[in-house]
Length: 312
Ligand SMILES: [Zn+2]
Image 1 (cartoon, rainbow, N blue to C red):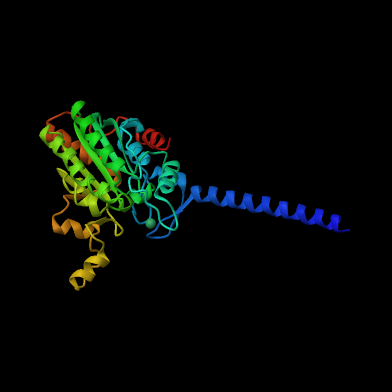
Image 2: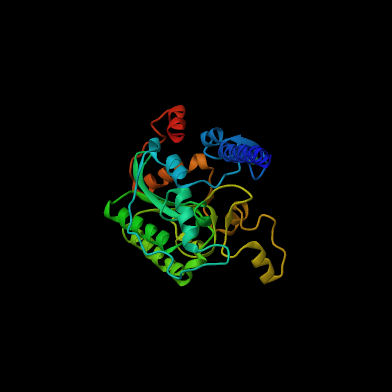
């Protein structure tokens, strides 16, 4: 009798577990398929959002996108080559909290983004001009500046000089320096500045395009561009410390849009606010004026072909 009952119970348990697994799997698949706009809450199919360069069609909110998506949007025909860099030893402080070891955090960030660090670089054509593009990926530990990210940026500058490219553009969406790496992360500030210096000495125009630019990044290579461009939106940030810290320090009320694009443009810290769909043409126009080089005014692809290439 007990055997008969046990058998039924174990079968029911197995069926329940299977159902729960398939439910979890479906939920994850749907999460990839659907996104909601953090600003107006409109729901989007992943494909639809990709087609619109990850910008909300209702309120123009600019989503924080991966380095891979940046490259596909920026380079002609979504075609580019990744720049390989020297691998550095990781986790110099053997940092760990009660919740997670930094080593494991890096491991899951690498798996999630298929990148070696929060900043990676690529080489390709932008409206026919030879350019390097470096980009942070917020999905990699909140886009924090680590030793490897600093190294990747520095080597992108070296590569730009060696290959005499027309310009280097960095797309910034960062949480600042990687605190887990302590002084090793802070050392990336002078190191990246040396990279920018190398570009300036070789007269290679350097563009900064930011969605979120704070902490050690805004205090170093994130504020040294020949042109500073911000994406529009209330949730964009350009500053050093966060709004609450600043308010607590000066004990004075701050404007509601403090540190967002509409406020920063009034301070002179940035040169322009540019929609994601216009960034490629604005930068290639400026490069051709600076270097007196001819460029293709618009992509040679028709808009439907280009959308197809971006969606690949
Ligand atoms: Zn929206």
